[in-house]
Amino acid sequence: AQQKEQFKPIYEFFEAAAYNSIADTSDPKQRLGLAESYLQNFPGSKFTEQVTAQAVISLQESKDTARLAQFADKAVAASPDNAGLLIVIANALSEAAGHETKASTYAHKAIDLSSARMQDDANARKTAGVGHSIVGYVMLKQNKFAAAVPELKTATGLLKDDPDDLAAAWFRLGFAYVKLNQAANATAALNQAAAIPGPYEPVAKDLLAKIKAARAGGSR
Image (cartoon, rainbow, N blue to C red; front, side):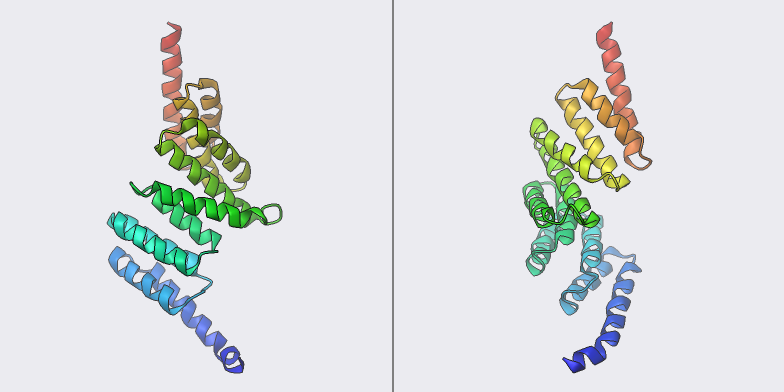
């Protein structure tokens, strides 16, 4: 124990230096290799979530969904109770065709791990909120629009302090209402998404314009 304490500063230096080398690597294949090596050599690192995110980004850039699923299982098995890591994995898998069910499973687990701390922990609220948004998104992809609504409404309530994630939840909620032919609810949700600067602003405005045009056409 004394030796570990003595060498702790040196270990932490290399831990951080190794993480920085991954973040500074632009080639996806090389970045993935470094990330996998890091997770093996620095188990339980404070940078585990960030390194996992770098690996996931590398696999997404490579469009290797099969390997992404394999990596996800391995990463979760190594840190099964890391809610933040589960969310990173769930978010990536929700965009990978054929892996939506597993994404929902991981998101549910992250929500469960965060639920007891949500009242006093902003990070736990964000994790749970993104988890509900992912579950709702998966339901949208499965055409379960009515079931997606309560998940996405919960997400919007939990993500009030996180504009980017909040915009995604509002847009997904608006889309669900569009599919349910609830134009007024869809307009209200999409107006919220359109009011937040970022990638969901233009697509929300575009969908709002289509709703307006459809309603105008119906009135004629």
